[in-house]
Length: 178
Image (tube, one colour):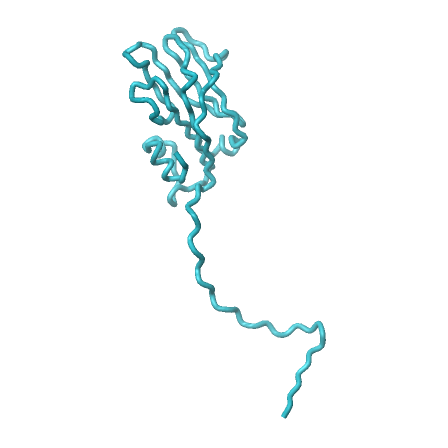
């Protein structure tokens, strides 16, 4: 017995059942959860501030251009700025989260107060020197930009959380090369 079946060209057959679920894929590499970071940048040259006033101090700033500092980052992100101070009494090459204060090596009375501020497309590192002086141009800074809503280890973090962490812990958390 011979059976022949034929379909007219263009006809679609009935829909079949869904296939079995495939095996899960391999885990991908650990990511940085949209975190942006810079290399270490020498703070050269410092510019004298024309807007900061006060007696008994001199104020300088160093601007870092970064198109990643958007209005969204300013409004809801977190920007961490770390510094390595050349003449740090705690030791050269230690990464410290700003704001940070240190005195000259050797017991000098000059105090350096470092902090940072954000402008659109710019991270401004600010140094108040009390009573007078100029910040070292060989100091280095590095920034880490964490967009708002970027959870770390499944939970939201605040600036207070980051301030309790060492530089090395933040680097490990976001897989940032040191």
